[in-house]
Image (cartoon, rainbow, N blue to C red; front, side, top):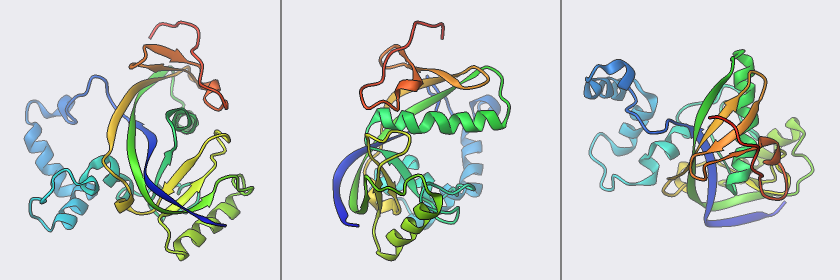
Length: 237
């Protein structure tokens, strides 16, 4: 299998968010947000790792992508279920080559979570994040082992043993597109916010995804399509 060089190519993912934005501790701080943030700096593993990276002094470049939460957090907080190509012990950042593919990946993952907790009708707000990726990646696009967990884990080991920055792959959620698994924080450039979405859950599935940016409700069943995702019938948000 060959390798491929990525040079600041943009990739996307979606993270839980709020619209409009609110202070993290607004509901419980009673105006003492600064105190709550100080406590977080003492106990949060992401903040402790940032302290280690900066050696306790103010960074020369406070906008360094390595210090920004959207890039930093995936490499600090372990995923107890592992990821597509790696077991739980390997922290990675998984991204999609375009927004539609990021939605195709994100919706079923959120559905799994909501089914496990038997959630009644509700909604989740999600934010699109875009950042450039640079590095040398194992090119697994079109690889026939994408649906075989054992082969995927073996490929992940190969990427690490080869000293690569991750794997470029064809996601099973949208076979016409591409995704990337990033192994190192240094590969990710500045992360920017994109559109904001509301995932509408009907107690069984996410049946609509509303875009705040486009003011359109999409049918999530069309995210997997080779063509563009399609708007759904009008609904009340």
